[in-house]
Length: 473
Image (cartoon, rainbow, N blue to C red; front, side):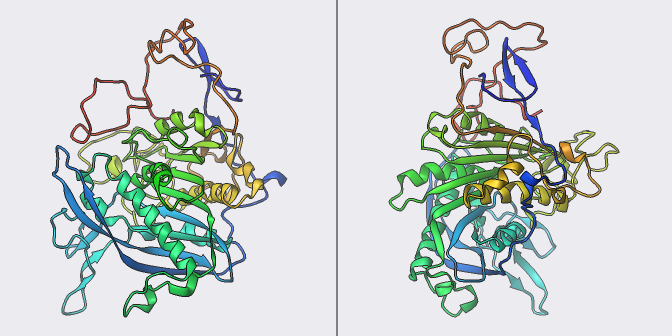
């Protein structure tokens, strides 16, 4: 469709679509004086919690029959020192190994495994022979900075869902969304002074530490990988819950797109952003870009801001500090050999960011988004929007790519509307009003359907082949 936007035009089928805008990563100007990487004035505390479990019953698929399991309601909460109240952020991890066994191998236990929960086990000499992977702890670097600025940041575990998601038609997005709701309910109980106590484990009992100190009228969500799809899915789940929460903003990092989700299609929407790692070796086709295409024009979401950030040199895993391995295509021993001059590790022309450099972009973009849309700090618009100016601290040193090209931003401001778009029938030849579309000078013309989702043949109904949308270029 044609929108009022600045940028280099991309021609398709005789109509003009603005392209992604380059982000100028320069020294802070007066308009961008806030550095989202800088710690705030508050001291920070982190507590790991355990508060019972959630019982799930998932329907069967072609790969697995129906399954019932319990997901522990556990994780960590990072909060400021002081009286509060603090606005609330929730970070949800995605699919990853959940257990380290005696030989040091990272594994995901089978749904029928007796070690599904992977408790920590020591041998007779004190050696660690089994270790639970605390995937939820991987966003502590981001939680600590935001907590120092006055936010309570909770990160729940979804480890058991990683072992059982083959039984779920939506790859676990709905159970993960229900974990979000249950965790927010837990915070509400702690805030009211009625939260659970862990017998014999005072270090894991939050109890009165948070009573009266949470501002649950303002909530922000960030999800990574399958968790990135789940935070968007929660907007739909939230609309049907008895206890609903006001979600001021959502960030999806390298999300899957199994169920064609987008804010504002089936709910009123919210401020929403997708971060796409340009060297993603896991969600290799930029599935989150499909969600952005739906989100930016969803009728019920027009009063909210929408963002797409493509981060050069970033991989899928390193926004989580627990996920230290290379992901997917780039992992040693990957059965698929890809010769990519920009992303392949060891390539002379590689633009790959270091783990620390990649996390700095997360601190800048995710941190600024939460402080802007949950905390109302409008001066952070300069970091987020078109022609954004990231602080120098967000750029890796030495820079893998020029600072000005580190992030490419697409921004849809509240209130913008599509003037005209391809029609549902014959989209390469007719627009939505029935007018004719003509293409000139194109080597290839096709229609990519952002509603296709990535899917797995064994987990979704059979459909006629449809061309997938390519990842961001």
